[in-house]
Length: 332
Ligand SMILES: [Ca+2]
Image 1: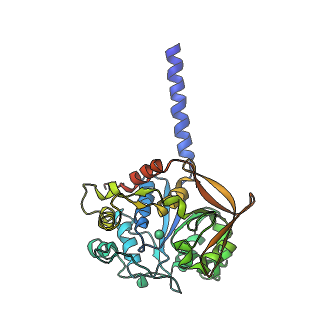
Image 2: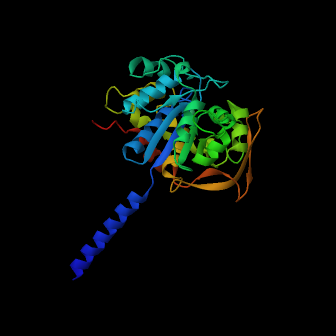
Image 3: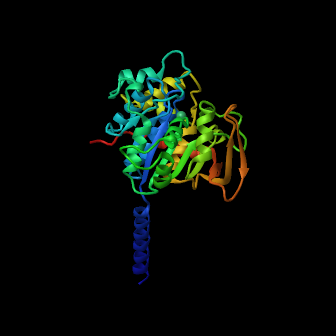
């Protein structure tokens, strides 16, 4: 009898676990990256594909907020490597930053497009990111889309300002209000920011977005990814013909061989898996100075914004992220 009860209990545990897993909704994600100035975007896209290949995220588009001509080719190299060459891309057609790596020699942003397959020759050949946003959002169920920005707010500003078109009778703000559930952004520094890169590079866009964005915004601030170093194991993998390994190997050898800060990976992790158990959040309102790019914070439990606060020890989060970054394409 005792043995039977143990078996029954084990079965119920397994059954509950399975039901629980199958109840987790798949995240519909649009990624908006500034691919180029830093290579944590490469790690963040790899983490995204690791979670896509385990069925946790449906990637709707991979957009660039960076007008640098290698940005879209590098994004497409990664999409192609993970066998998702059909995922839409887009880039700004209006005023937006154009920035590349600080490396003077062995630039990964030149190496990837010249050594790996991609479709678009240069970023300016890609479709308008606002058009891609409008087309894709209009096709989704209401409040079903998560957007994750790991770059500038340029595209989102133009999306909010967009007018009704062939894709939707709604203007940009109405379209976002109807379709977007959550925005997760690697941006700012909390509670006080001295001019974090993603805000400072297009501070007027950042200010406009945080003041008028209809959904909740969760910020992964500068202080979150700063001490989470990853990429060392990726750079040492024995695999060949991997743009992920090559980007990290080339770059870490010119920077810190122990690893690169994981700013963007933390935002993508939270956008797909939620902030628990890695972080907790503080609710309130961010304020951005559109001249200096600095940011302030006002605590408010009714606020629409939230910033991440460290909960899990950094080495543990680093190990989780590194593991996702070692993900390789599924065999056909
Ligand atoms: Ca980035």
